[in-house]
Image (cartoon, rainbow, N blue to C red; front, side, top):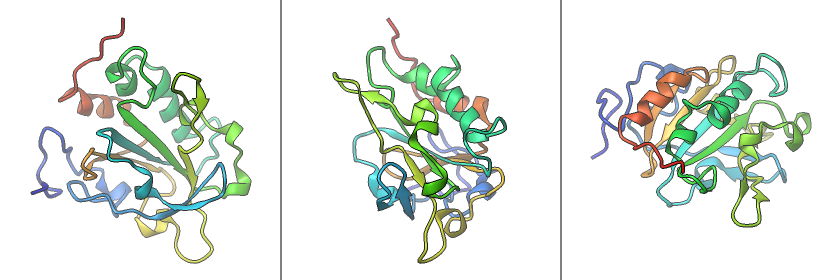
Length: 199
């Protein structure tokens, strides 16, 4: 039985930041929501994009700032994951593996599809993969909808601050954190993942 939001354990964090994404309670199954894939404007269900492949999911729900703005928390979060030696992505991804081999990082932006260009995205969201280094364009989504509430409204996500929702391989929410809780995110994964061999 999955732990409830009150039961912190090795692979489920505390619920102190759950208010940033109230519709994704810690310890409960990740509930999907409609989004629009940025690259091709295709409406999709966010939760249905995850494969049953054993990877951890890190969903970064952007703050209100445009990702190219100097104050973008989402952009700073992506830089941390891609470049900082304290990043769990760098710490736990084996040398030579695709950048998303252990962590599948996806972002949902508040801006509409016409307000964003794929070329403006942080590099982490356009990873080059496999032997030929092809770009994966399926990491970024927009929240825009015309037929109902968007994912930020439907799942109670803080529009000003954004949120990070960590989802276990079994599709249960493991943690909810602020976008700038870099050290806390790294410490969470360090509790149960080994450091990768880098050479």
